[in-house]
Length: 134
Image 1 (cartoon, rainbow, N blue to C red):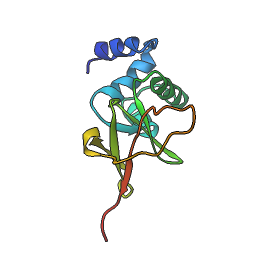
Image 2 (cartoon, rainbow, N blue to C red):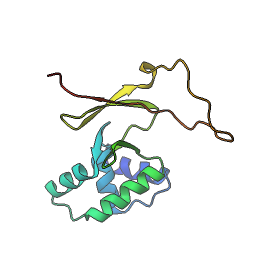
Image 3 (cartoon, rainbow, N blue to C red):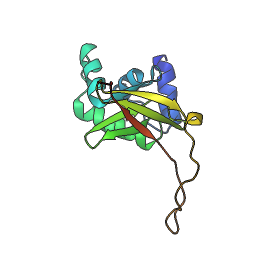
């Protein structure tokens, strides 16, 4: 995606397109992928960017709040930002730390539990943790 395309996408989500936000979005939204904040910071450093760590975290939180990216928590201390926001599920490889998409139609539920009184379902997301055999 071009920088002008990234800028338009950010604006459509009601986000002010600062140069730092455009840099971060260009890395994350350039293709369908899952990146942690640390991976984004590493890519910014490799490109000699001056974007601070705090700006990366604040921007990712803003992008998530506005629906530009989807947060995927794989454990209590590891979070990925997913550039694919339509409903889908994930495999998480605990050996490699990689996250991979599972199309929504490949996961089926025969029945879900009754919801608490006064609640409605927002979404159902499945995270399947895998590791190499042996």
